[in-house]
Amino acid sequence: MTTPKKLLDETLLWLCAIASPIGEEKALCDAIEERVNRLQLAAPVRRYSDSIVVPLFRKEGAPHVALVGHTDTVRTENGPAHLDGDRCVGSGAADMKSGLAVMLAIAETMDRSVISCSVTLVFYAREEGPFAENELGPVLAQDPELGHVDLAICMEPSDNKLHLGCTGSIHATVTFEGKTAHSARPWEGQSAITKAAGFIAEVGQIQPEEAIVDGMVYRTVTTITRANDGGRGRNVVPDRFVLNLNHRFAPIHSIEESKARLVAMVGERAQIEFTDLSPAAMPFRDHPLVHALEQCGVRGVERKQAWTDVARFAQIGVAAVNFGPGENAQAHKKNESTSLALVHEGYEIIERFFRNHSQARSMSS
Image (tube, rainbow, N blue to C red; front, top):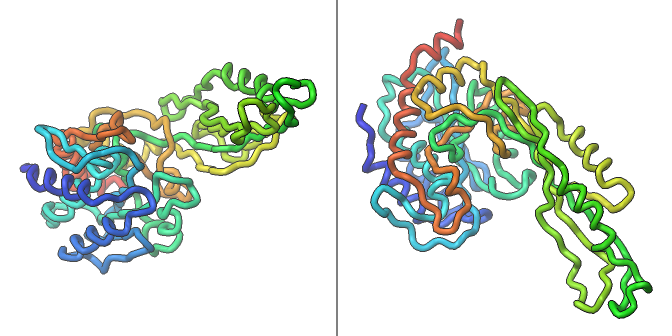
């Protein structure tokens, strides 16, 4: 098997050169749509706002697999995209334009006659923001095929490891209220910061809770990630102190169960408002297509101790996994980069998976 290394390198550089910070994905979506429209497709591209679904190939009676990638990046400091030896440097190089490059290279180079399943590509916007604003949600709700695929492979950066399932995530605003006063006479007021001190200490003492699912350990954790006193002066007893509480929970827990836990934790001490609710996803480790992918040269199998869009597919009954060639440690970093060798290897693994006829037999048996 010959890896189209030059095409992969050029495609990744091309993707990184088109800026697509969250909320500004239109230019990249337009460019990808124009590029895939040059190919022979099983059906026309379906566009939903700044996201597209590409029916690449159909094989009657065979499993249907979707390769899924988000086009947006976080807003970090990066210079012009460029290649530097074995690395591509640019915003989104790891998370997750390396995965998009593999998707496009599969579409443009793989011999359709050896593909053993139906293949759909999904390029979607706004993954790096709140759950409710992510465009994959409405795409799944509106598209006639995606809810019926047999496996979705989310091309999140995983160093070519298979990351199974994901933890759920809740963000909540916790507001402590006091009474303003001059700091020279604090007894005339009540400091909201001091009022919050006990709660902050309690959260700091919470230990990770382990849950074993399909042989993998997921951890439930709670963290205070932001604090704001509302901008009161340095000589004012603050009457308001706001915390952002982020609760990550193992797949054995539901959103409602996790919300109730946070409400009980805060109690009557403060007001709590839930601002972002993202469900967890089970690993699907025993699914025949997941097993087939595992046998195609992945670098390992691990649990995903973070949230990803595999949870959206799991919610509608579709098996989904995380697998991508980007370097996980490079995601969201200033001057982000990724290894081109990993991108080449990622392509080979996906191509090998699509050639594997045993998966088609396992699904039909």
